[in-house]
Image (cartoon, rainbow, N blue to C red; front, side, top):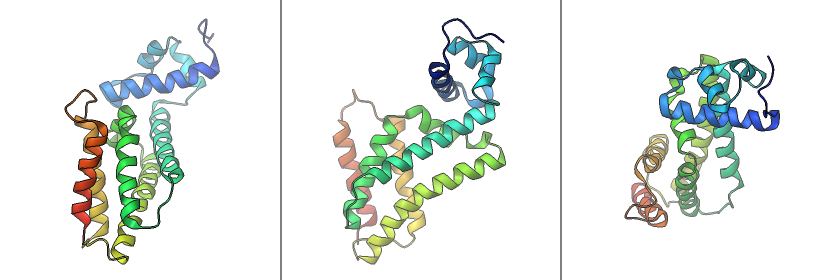
Length: 195
C-alpha cells in the first residue's frame, strides 16, 4: 500500500505510538481498532503494519517502553546512603515521573488484563524490578533501625498504591502545589514506616 502523502517513517512511528497511547487511555484497548489509530495518525490502515505486527504488540511496546523508561530514570537519580533519604527521593521521583505521563500510567495498570500471557510475564517482571528497588530501600531502613515494618513486600505495594493515587486527583490549578502534595505524601510515607 502506498504511503499517505506527507508521511515519513521517522515521524509516523512515534505518531502511531502517541495516538495509540492516547486512544487506549481514553477508550480502552479492546475498544480501539487499528483503523482508528491509522485515522488518528492520518495514514492508511495497512501502513500501521510497517511499524507494528499487530495491536497486541503495540500495547506491549507501549507498556514495556514505559517500564524501561521508569526504571532507567530511577536508576539515574542521585543515590543516597541512608535509607530515609533514599525513600524520600523515591517518593518525590515516583510522584513527579508519573504525573508527567498520565496516559502511560493508566495503561500500565488498567490494560494488563489485555496482554497475552507471554507479554504479561515480561511486564510483570519489569514491574517487580521497580518494586524490588523500593523494597530494598525499606529492607535497608529496617536493617539500619530507621524503619519498623512487619512486612516489607506489603509496605512496598502500599507505598506505590498511595503514590499512584496522586495521578487520579492532582490538578495543577488545585489548592495545593505539586511541592506541597509531595511534602504531604512524604510525611505520610515516613509515618507509615517509622520506627
